[in-house]
Image (cartoon, rainbow, N blue to C red):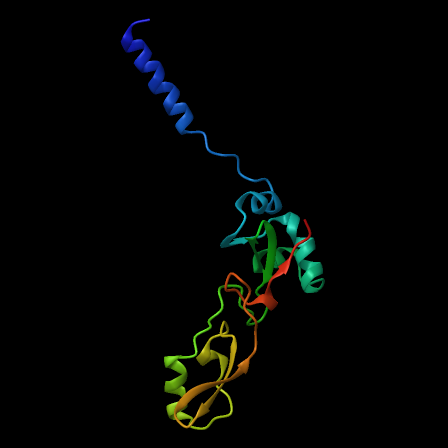
Length: 159
């Protein structure tokens, strides 16, 4: 075979191989076993809806809404799910003890016993109040898991 034909065959073969991608995991469980830990929040597939309903007590919610409001991520090869619910954070937790918006609120509401969540954000792990014009924490509301998410919001799905 002439050299040009070999080169053409090699280029075609490389193009074919270039279009092959690793097989997508056919389930969150298979994906997480392969990925190990992946903090990307992904919408749950239909197969995880019954698990989410059971774990979060969502039997009164339509399955389509459960699917739209529930996410999964991978931690140590396991599937964890979180349902947004009302004011429930699924993203990374805010562990900051210095919130500019809270200080601004306290300047206008000195010595308030609380700072509303619309000011602090729903992802803070602390309870807040005003000490004069300064925002201070008064305790921890949520624990943080090893990946930085609010631990109480995430539940391990059955394998």
